[in-house]
Image (cartoon, rainbow, N blue to C red; front, side, top):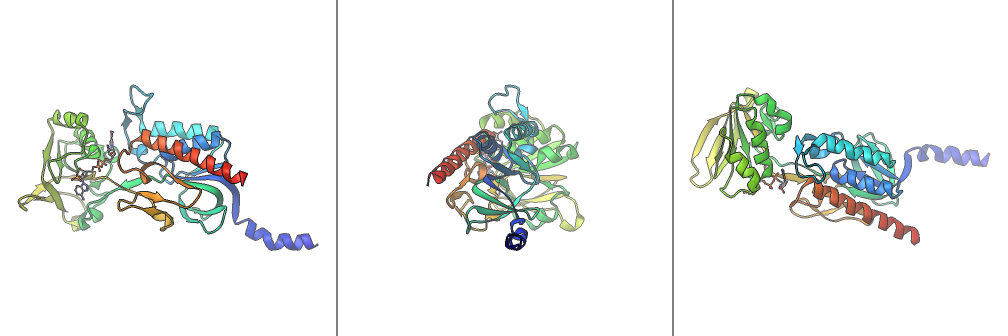
Length: 322
Ligand code: NAP
């Protein structure tokens, strides 16, 4: 009778929590999935909250030409789906959910998932990647999806025989321009200086395309009239002379870098001025774009996912010994 009373008292509370995991991995890009392959293969009970768009940025990458082992390149979503399959083979639980928030005030830590399930975990690997940086223009926000885009892989075919601008001077901008050049009539890369971060190979490919031109020392200060509901042009400013120019175009692709996705951690990790995680609570590890704003490659994300997994394993082994 007494046992029944105790059970009645605690059962509703216990049912709030599902199993306790050894490792919760937030993020299902190359960093998170590589980490999950390692942790699950090492016998750690692993849960991957892969986010609602599985695969992170690789899911919108047409061909990955520099991931070792694929001499003819591999399609981004296929690479991700292979990693996912490999993790599941070693019994990682992979679900299309986000981690909404973490409670580090109790141990095991508690994670609230986007389906409001609360999950307990002895360690956490943060691999939530990064999101495209935007210019911060009002017109950019209101015309997003109506001619303003950050994803040529998703939207390039919509611009067949049209004129588009690509903003930025790094690898992303040059890759976007190259892909767009296969569909659009004319692609103009708009860059705020004449110093490019894009690699030589991409710069050479862009130079060889007749329908891509580059405007240096130029920034976009406005995109069309938001009330129109679609993009029909942009206002450009010469960063040296201040001279303004109106240019007609049908699309504006922003490719000016990424911001690490760490806001869900609500200040429980320390980040630098670029949003990169530099310090986290005990048993919390980070991998991929949330710790790297320099290399940002699928292979480096995978490498750091592997390191985070091994660090989590060592942490849990030490904790067991205590
Ligand atoms: P990035 O290398 O940081 O380049 C960002 C570009 O945007 C720079 O040219 C920067 O100009 C410009 N920019 C930044 N903020 C701006 C603003 N507010 N207004 C106008 N222009 C602005 O970013 P990314 O091209 O996204 O590349 C990120 C990383 O991913 C890099 O390490 C890159 O190598 C890698 N990546 C690799 C590949 C590949 O290997 N195939 C493909 C894509 C990306 P400033 O130079 O003046 O700052």
